[in-house]
Image 1: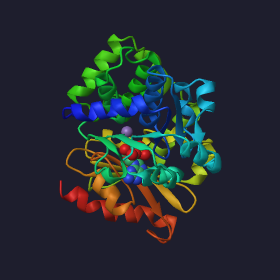
Image 2: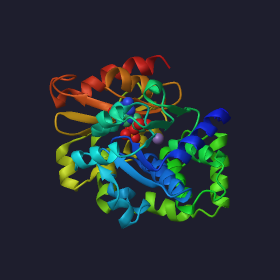
Image 3: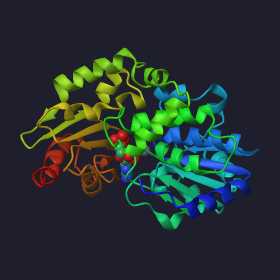
Image 4: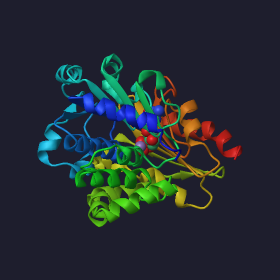
Length: 346
Ligand code: 5GP
Ligand code: MN
């Protein structure tokens, strides 16, 4: 992590001191880092003054992350896909907007237009490649870091607030760091472990958080994982593995939105596999997740062939039919063809 510019920190302090009605927005299909950074910042802002703070999402968080909030907090979140009119009115009434864990408004789903039209102060805190800097008044962007949650922690620590960071912020931040690093398997930097060391010293109960994230799934998810690894995963001699999860399998196993989280990582455990692609069928498109080992660019592959992007070793996007492939059955051939150059060049 580069040093955080002191001028930017004073600018942020100034914005926060003047703000009275604050909005926090994050990316479409919110994951642990999106929710962790949003919830972490919300508790901090609420503790640091008499401010109204509200989280805005394009779509609902997966059930697997519900442990991060109590019932009142979740009820207070505005979800644009569920009530766009009310979401737009509430967002317009805010004077300050924090955008967390995404680099451009187009990653915020149905919130995009409302974020672009927002006239108050807009602050970005993000760890993706290529931020849309022109869209924000203040831009904290850093890619040499585990997660937006970790970045938020380092930034908040530098703010001059005597009350410090509330325990609820610290819990949310450790959750975000844990999920975005796949439990400290990827994207771990010295700054990550320093931050986590401080979080543990401050009393965060990591065992409780790990229990919620990794040992609280339904049996069906495990059964589906077995089926996918045994019967569906394809591996190639080029070092590619891919899994295509059909709507039928989702229905058969009764799988909900967040329950396929982490599946894309599994094939990388095979020695020869250097890139793993996971497709989940939706209406008219596949949701795509890509993971790669060092030397193979998941980000460029997602950008060039799957209408997406992300990080160098973890990216995602979408594959549409009939725009990108004629029909869903053509996905396997498409994946094998477009990934070949990425595997050959490493
Ligand atoms: P996941 O595979 O866990 O859904 O996403 C992995 C990474 O890729 C995340 O950092 C996420 O922000 C990014 N990502 C996922 N889907 C998209 C997408 O549709 N567009 C872009 N630009 N990035 C994506
Ligand atoms: Mn993230």
